[in-house]
Image 1 (tube, rainbow, N blue to C red):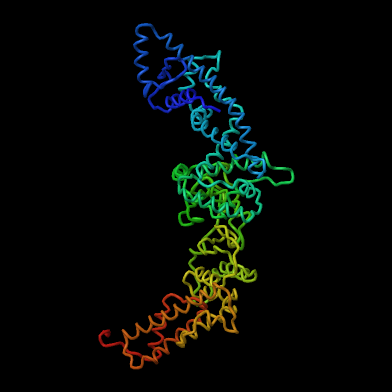
Image 2: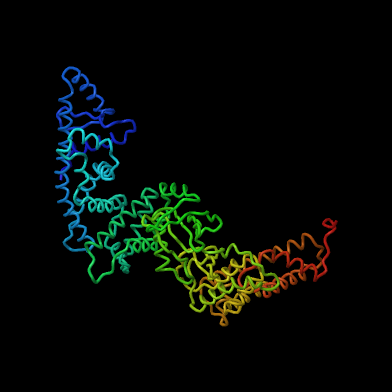
Length: 582
């Protein structure tokens, strides 16, 4: 199909007229031959404006107005003619896309490429004008058409508004907008499968990862909003053209969640236009979902559900909060992920996401685990016990399941109104990782040794078979033996093959050696020592004693060196050097 350059030129001139701030509807002039329209303040329009000013002075304006009327009618007729031709190509493109997604042997890539090219050219030349008219954002153009054509013809720009199949054609253009920006060929058939939550074959997975890598190579050139609209349109096509009564309904949030699992990071991108709206939110504003109003109260700056998410309390509603993200896509993905994929710790409950993706209504949680100031001192405080038991029970369950979430982190855990543990992040099931659970308990303790010891005992981590391995590592290290951590793990009594445990053993051995050296440097520098060997033995003894009492397992507690030095000085009766005495 040949694109009518006269038509596209006229549409662009009219578009420029509407966008110009100080222009009015009468600032257009016709071409000399009566088929072109020009905005009179730029380019050829400026020259013709002078020509017609002279003509009008001598012969009047009637012929000029008639030429302009003729140009507008030409534009209407040319547009109708162009669009009828486009519909034929649209049908051909749609059929080609069906064959492509079905991986049909009759698919002809040349036809598909040709029709896609025609669509793109037509869209680039006319879409901005049509979109403006359809949205009712063209008052100057409307007045111009009405003045020159009147009720006997279109009356205004109604012919551009009443376009058959316009929304459907625009929907397919959104797919093309994504495809044409990415250098790598899109695995459309695989995307169709992901929208149905079907497993990909190995070759499809490879193609998907290559395509995702190609998207990442674009940086921020591929906008998250453009990508989302394209995927949404693709899912609509799949539902309309590929779905049968035996196949579940495809979902765009399923597709995008699966793409995120494959590593696509575009959904983390900030949308500047959306972020500007987020920044404008303030107390007293009302947000609506399905006619229900949610008045904003305050922003919980110290209670963010997760990085890049902002949380607001809802006035007169103590059980819900308003959440906004960094774009209009991320909240739907998080809600779907929480429903479908979160494992181990119950996710925060997502009540609803607004239809435009701007905000979500989410369960209101209490304090975060990482923010809790534990009251326990010599023994566990009763108030702490109510909050520590859910953590201990959860860790015990991980041990029973022989699995640990890949992204387990205490900073993403909060308490519900009923003191149950909730995760603000989607947790994915991973292999069992003993050192990760120990570190998790240490982080949950927030520097409180009594709380840490409680968690280690209550969960059974301090009596786990792996604990004996780490105890042997520290014992041999303090005895001055050169046994490698991996060699100790290979002993018959342990026979450890878990990579995380062995790697933690190596690191733990280095930490113990570092602690020994730090304590000895402090003692040699500050105290009079006649027998360094006896001091070194005492240091090793105190380190091991504190290690056992503290149930540290594969970690060391903060300021442990100060306590070891103090105990060594006291037990050996060491005196300070003269230059350090008062």
